[in-house]
Length: 320
Image 1 (spheres, rainbow, N blue to C red):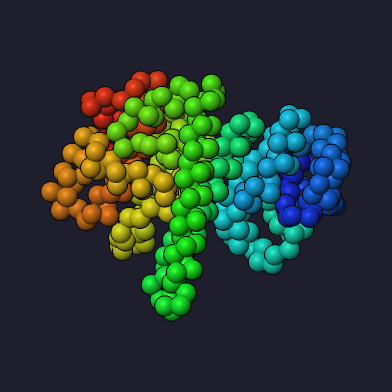
Image 2: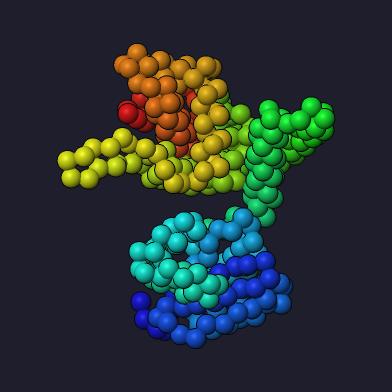
């Protein structure tokens, strides 16, 4: 990669966009509004970068990524932890917006994260509903935890808040279901996923909005992307326990709940789970293996465009 086609890093905050590049050159910043994004697009089109890297920042990056992608610029939205680990590995311990932009540019040059198609407006709207539902479920968990140790005078207030939050979840579930039913873009995917015992509308919406790669990768790649691939923890003669780590935490959490249901109502997953327990596996280990198997099955179904049937596991092979 040469200076004619640099890698660009953009640190996105609520008010400002800080821009860095690799090979290093003088950076600049723009306001994070319609006018600032317009100026950024114009300048980057003149630079013709090989890659533009931004961190996923809970949606703050969406407007910038969409504007750049609409102009044909190659945009990669990456996990912030990957960039921070890369910064530490390269000795960049200080942290400012300018430094972060430069680190992202260097990360793009060195790692070359893949450029994936940006979601359309319908998918972004569904993703907003899915994310909001996840946030409210977290609030419910927090309030339940507070309830256990709350003073008697506060318990009624907390219980009323939990009830109100649950009403919001119900409302979002209806909006999510309507969005899935009304969009012709997702109909085939929704029908295939809906044919699987244990896969409900929450997992379906999460897959559509937050895991568009499902059905396009092999089983190892999709397991790694979600974070259900067992990772080694070895050094010398020491052999540590394998663990799952990283990946898309929100997607993994939804798969966990879906797998709990599938171990009761999905014949293939139920048989696999019981077989692992019979072999002496811990329940948590068996459940993670079932998460990976369910994910692998869904990946194969979407890849080959085949609906669920009880012999589907024969198509994906062993998962443990």
